[in-house]
Each structure stands twice: as structure tokens, then as C-alpha cells.
Amino acid sequence: QVPLVESGGGLVQAGGSLRLSCAYSGGIFTVNAMGWYRQAPGKRRDLVASITTGGSTNYADSVKGRFTISRDNAKNTVLLQMNSLKPEDAAVYYCNAVKFYGSVGVPLGSWGQGTQVTVSS
Image (cartoon, rainbow, N blue to C red; front, side):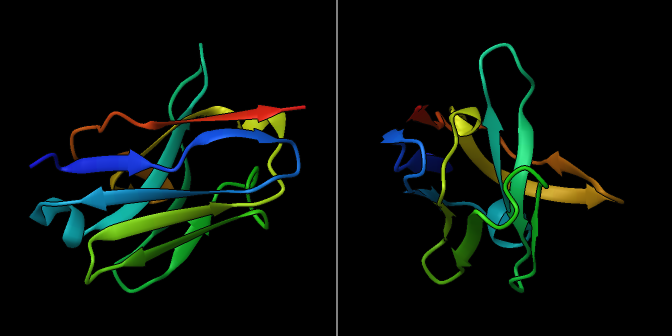
């Protein structure tokens, strides 16, 4: 069973919305916070949103107020609702378990294939 499967990406116009979904399996994902990362061409992979097992959330300043992360512990899924999308949001989006050391979120598991988000201006 593939531990992480991301889906829901696509092409959307600026100002539009997408909802990403991540299905996970394996204990490392069920007992840790989960996060959505993104990586644009030539740039590093950055954490944009995270959620603890208890539902506490945290967002990068660049997406705060526009993106909402949620998780269903019973279904082993984590969602990312993205509204008011901007061209700079275009990237491959990945989910992973994340552990925080202070304010730094470190990914814990293997990466999935990601899902491509393209935003046209």
C-alpha cells in the first residue's frame, strides 16, 4: 500500500479554488501532525500548512486567510482547501507527517508523487 497519495490538483484561473486531498497509511502519519508542502520549479520545498492530531493548525504567511487545512483521523485523510489562488501558488503540492522543532517543521516520512497545481493569470 502506497503510504501517501495526493490528489485534487489541476489548472485554475487566478482567484479560483481547488481542494487537495491526501490519503495516508502507516502509523507515522496517524500519530504525528500532517502538513502540506509545495515546491515550485527551481525552488525549495516549503511547508505551507500543518495540522496536529488534535486539530490545531498553522499556516505560512503567504497562504494565511486563503488556505484551510483539515484532517479526518478516522479516514486517514488530510485536505487542503485553497481559495483566492494566485499565480505564485502554482507548484507541486505534497503532504507528509511533520515534526516541529521550535518553528521549524521537519518532514518525517517518504514523499508521495505530489499533485500539480497550475494557476493562470
